[in-house]
Structure formats: C-alpha cells, structure tokens
Image 1 (cartoon, each protein chain N blue to C red):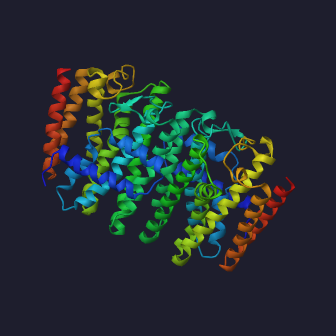
Image 2 (cartoon, chains in turn orange, blue):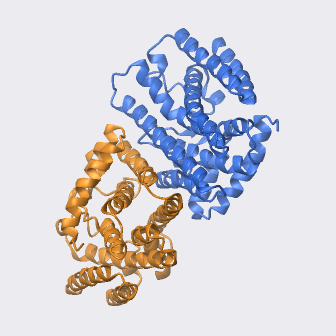
Image 3 (cartoon, helix red, strand yellow):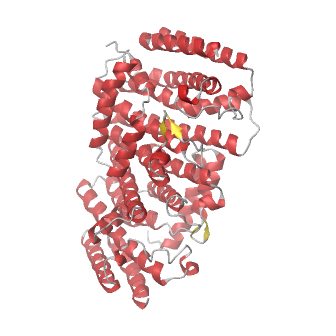
Length: 290
Length: 290
C-alpha cells in the first residue's frame, strides 16, 4: 500500500477516536484527550510505524492499534510538557494548551491516564503472548526514556546546568528519539525479526535527534503563527544551537539524515527511506533559507 | 511465615530501596522517589499481598517484587494528589509533600515515572508469559481505576457536583479500593487460581471502602499532628460523611468489615482474615470513641 501522510492521517484519525471511545474512560478525561488529539498533529509517529510495517505483512488493524498507543503517549507527554510548572506553554498546534483550555488538574490527570491507556490498548491486542510481552517491554522502555529526556530537558533549563553538546544530543535521543525508535521497531516485533529490533530502535532515536534539531531551527526562524506554537522561546534554551554554530548544527543533522536514508534503504525499508529522503530534503532546504 | 506488619515493613523496605536503585533512573527522580517512599508509610498494600500469598506457595522474592510495583504506584498517586492544582497539600505523613520539599516539576515528573516504573518491575520478573501478561492486565486495570477514582474525587470537589452516597462509594472503590484489590489477587495469579481473581479483586475494593471511611473519620477526629498530614480539610468535602450521619457511616463500614473477615476466612485466607479482624477492631474502637 502506498499512502501519503495526509491520507494516512485521515484514516488513522477515524480509527483513533473510535478506539478511545471504546476505552470507556471517564468522560471529562475523554473530552480532554479528544481535544489534545484533535488539534492538528501530523501523526508522524504512527506514519513511521506504517512505513516501517511496509517491509512486512502487518494488518492495518495492528498498525492502527500500535499507532493509537504511541500517539496517545506522545500527546500526553506534550500535555504535561506544556504545564505551568514545566514549559509553561499557552499554545500547542495553534490552539490553547490543555491546562489553558480546561484547567491544570484536568491536564495533569489526562496526562496520567494517557501514560497508562496505551498499555491497555497493547494488552487488548490479539497477539501471541511472546510478541505481546516483547512489545510491552519496548513500550515501557521507550516511555521511561521519554520521561528521562523530558526530565533532563527541564533540569538543564530550570537549574541552569552546564551541559555539553553530547548531553544535549543524548537528551534529544531520549525525549524525541525514543518514540520514533519504538515506532520503527514495533512492526519488526510483530514479524519476529528479532535481529532488527535494536538496530531499528537506534535508528529511530537518530531520526529523533534530526527532527529535534529541525524543530530548534524552526523556533528561531519561524513566527508563532507559522509554527502554530509559541516560538522564539528557545533563544536562551539549552539546544544544540547554544553549543555550536548554526552551520555546524545543520551539517551535523544533515549527516544524520544521509545516514538514515542510506541505512533504511540498505535494510530493505524502501518506502521509509524515500519518505525520510523527501521529508528531510524539504525541511533542510527551508532551514538553509532561514 | 508469620510476620507482623512492622517486621514485614523492615525487610520489605530494605528490598524496595535496593530495587529502585537497580532501575537505574535519572538521579533527581530517584532521590525524589526515595524521599516520598521514606516518610513512614505503613506498607499496608504490600503487606496485604504478603498475607494473601500465605494461602499459596509464593517466593518472598515474588512477593517483594510485586509489592515494590504496587508501593511505587501508590506513592506516585499520592505525589500527584498533593499537587497545588489538585489537593494542594503541604504535608504527607508528617513531612513536606514532594512539591514542597523539591518543586512542582520534580513532583509531576516523579509521579509520571512512578506510574510506568512498576510495569518495568513486572516486566523484569521471572514468570511464565501467561502469568506475566495476566498480572500486567490487572495492574493496568487497577491503575486506570485508581486514576478514575482520583478524577471523580477532584471533579466532585472542584466542580461542586451533586453526588449521591453511591457515587461516593464507587469513587472510594476506585481511588482506594483498586490497589487493595490488585494486591489481593496478584498472588492468586502467580498460583493460577483463576477462579479466585475476580472475587479477590472485588473484596479488596470493599476493603478500600472500609479503609477510606476510617480515614475520613480520622480526618474529623484527629489533629494534624496525630494523623501526620493536614486534617480537618475534609469538613466540606464530599465524603460519605457529607451524605449520611456518622452513626450510619460507622454501621455501614462495620458491615463491610464483618463481611470481609468472614469471606476471607471461608476462602481459606486465614491470616488475612485475622489481620483484618484485628486491624478493623482497633480502628473501629478508636473511631467510636471519637
């Protein structure tokens, strides 16, 4: 199946909202989760899952179930990240952030639910026990890495830590990379290609670093309207741009990008390689134009 | 093995702190988790697990591993419950609450970690896949019920909802009962006594209602020093005491108590029955004396 990210998002979103309804959670939390999921996310992580699955023979239902789990986790992490005590962001994807639209306790509790609901989705999947437990293992690992990256990021800022470029890259790998790593390796687990799990997880984390650097560059070059969220907030932030020149940062991310395109191609993930190639080309071009 | 709750706590706590160290989490979170776990909790939930396990042949290691998972989850729920946006409690077990001792972002992130770390502990247990997945299922279910009860409680208060006694009892079952239910049924899962899982989970929830009512009564009768936390805060709260007379509430909880003592005895959980019998007798006596 060859589907672009926009048509994928359309069918995925239909599935996602139905799936959440079936979770039967308390209505206040369901509404708030719907709100945060409805404000125009690209579904890049589930799409990565879909692209990675093209190498194997996975049912769309399995792809969608796994995608729902990852997207709920991702969205929940953004809800907590936006909280006044953490990033204090009033906007997310051009809409008021959860605690601004609802209130702080709803945002905290929605995030709490959203860290556990994905495991309920995985638990309810129709898989052999060995696949289910392996998927859960990776999911738990990625969640903890995500929290670790988030904590590092917050501590770097709030406690004004002395950090090295390596500290920041490692934080990017955890905070942004872990979920991409998860998405890339989940299909291989369902196909029991165990020799690929770790390699795919690693490459996903590398993509996360590339993605985060592009996001940092957008923050300094785009207006809030263009980006759909508060921008210009990162000027004094501990991003890789606070450590290296913009040129060096772009060159570094370009080399990650080239390596990803080649690695995925060589591993037989042709559609994934093509997508990253196009995605990266556009975004690097935009960034080079400033 | 016949061990009282105090000597159990001593050996359990030794295990717990070593176990957390082995989780290799980022140090700021480890310190904050240690802090919240060190302030004198009775370990009633892990002790319930231990008592329930006495009917079967469980290794102490399995009891301790499951107990660590439950206690971390429980403590994390208290950390989030104390947050300014939720219960706004400055003290917990006679010590400053997490956000007061550290700061709000540390408290939020510690709770987030603490909702997922228990699953990592379960994931690392040496169990057959069918037992592991069943344990995880119950754990995920109890976590979501805990969040549901917490959300109901917060909404009842903040939005000044009209509630019935049944609403409050159901909230107690979720908020306080689900973890007791979990503790009681986990040993039966390891022993594959599947006909007992649901019954034990249900009875644990009933104990939670009894326990929560006793806590409510303590709140109106004990000083903050005696209780080790802010008391007298519940006067206008939607507890069962806001619905029924104190006499009726005590009678209701006494009937739950008698039923639990008898049910556990009849099911062969003799030590559990004896413990609840003694525990309840003391606490009901204290409460009746006001």
